[in-house]
Length: 109
Ligand SMILES: [Zn+2]
Image (tube, rainbow, N blue to C red; front, side, top):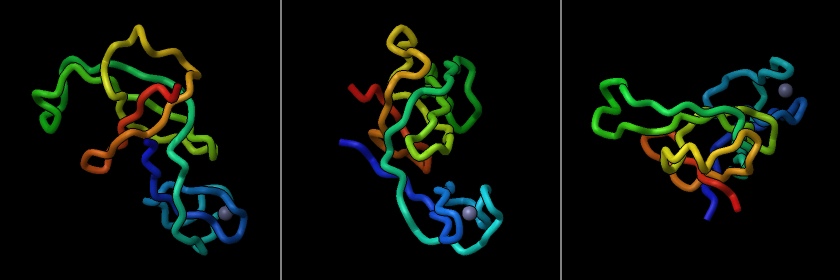
């Protein structure tokens, strides 16, 4: 199952913005409507954290990832595990869960 990610679609130019945006990062318009990203994309970069921030204590190690969504937007999330041997830049990934507003990604195929 792929988890869809809330978005704001610009009514002026069609760009899919992250839901936290108040203005379109493509054209500056504030005329946006609720939408969702499909939750699929490719792994842009990643890094495994062994010494976490306080809010993540006990969950280390974990792998932080930047995913380029199929809609073109990049989003920061975490990988479902920290086995870096499984990860390749550019590999297809999908959102499989959401924890406290952070999306968890895993290999798509
Ligand atoms: Zn726009």
